Image (cartoon, rainbow, N blue to C red):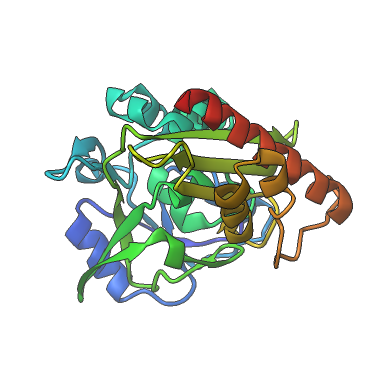
Length: 286
């Protein structure tokens, strides 16, 4: 299939992109890498009246260290560019997830900011950024703001991003040497999207008596959007048992059911992935 006709504008600078967004109507979409938006336009699940192409804005690319030791990832940084950057070696789950996203073409064109903005319920990366306590930096012609990723997602393909706002960077706090992370997922073979995926960060501080005092568990492919499994986190902190924590992975969540996995199977599947991710992270803690 082909998409319906639309107006096309290519921005030559961030300021021009913001100016175009300021005058945009609800039918306007931002085009970055295009690997998420263009397929759903071709199937007419999305029917934008106008595309604003920001794909050539090099000022939104790159990975840089922040003054506090954190990481700034430009919104147009591709999966491949992030994977190749040595700065991510301290974030173990990023090294786990990035090579598994899509195929080589997707990783070479798909962008980090696009993955966050699109809010696909089965995308791998957003769940990983959730447990890393990432922040989203957005700008508009009116000004800018920084949003905690835990407050960013609202539902399938829906976020708190306003129509005139543009994601410019993703910020990760400095990685602690006391914490380890991992990502495990069962992919849908044809699409590569997660049927059920789990991202975890765990750790223990010095003098903590050997008990874990940090547990963050992010889930994708299961609910309307990526989410933190708070009940599973609390169980792991209490018991230290990956299987016991995994049993709470879907507490309070309406588990998705579709042609690829019904609700019962997907619930069982995510429990396996949470357990595996926790076990992998525990092994890395040593």
